[in-house]
Amino acid sequence: MQPPVEPVYVVHISDTHVGPDRSYARFGRTSWPCARQVVDLINHLPQRPDVVIHTGDVVSDPDPAAYRLARETFAGLAVPIYYAVGNHDRSADIVRFLPMGPYEPLGADPDLLTYAFEIKGNRFLILDGRAPDHLDPHGLLSEEQLAVVRREAAAEGPPLAVFIHFPVWPLNSTWFDEHMLIVNGRSLHEALLPARPRLRGVFHGHVHMPMQTVRDGIVYSSVASTFANFAGWPDVPEPVLIDEPPGYCFLHFLSGQTLIHYHTFPRPDGAA
Image (tube, rainbow, N blue to C red):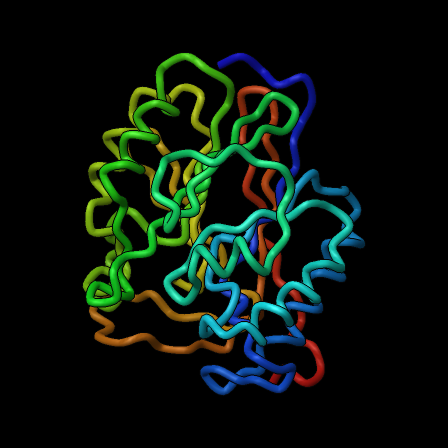
């Protein structure tokens, strides 16, 4: 893996579940004050990030009012933001409502938001794992997207980071494993294996908790929701909301090394 010219710093957020107005609540928690809070936190970090990547469920329902509120909120960021499509999102709505930095569309299907961009010698691949409604909340990657991954994940190339909403591997939790995984996650993993020496990791949301899985030397890393988080214990048959603070990850892409720092923040007033 050829080292980048300089470090790249990424803030990874997910599962903001913004509603159509600022008072919207889900799981008994008001989501918008937390989204507003994380924007302010990112803008005042001791180390300015190069980019923010949101791995989906930007909104709770594909409602134009919710996307407009999300756009207004994330417009406050002092750095560019990119989005992956969550199971609560629609790719067309993200393209329509949410500005992003420059990127290279990948694939011919207009209903899939699959793209790449580069920062300081690092390549970022964003995949659209939203499945047909009858499989929700599972994820699914189309054959076209898997072909994109195979092209992007050649043995030679720049450092590569992959972002998607859904977890790839079983997480030893009954609810997650029966309902939340990418149906063809093994195919994604196999497509990524040639790039293993230069792969920063695969970063996802959806599970509303931070966890890491390592398979064949590839790190799969999730991030907490910015407003409501779940327990992931074995043999739990349904999602269990826990009283954990909201959070985000700060990723350090260094020469030959990736660091994943998990941060929490106090739940703001009005986000009970």
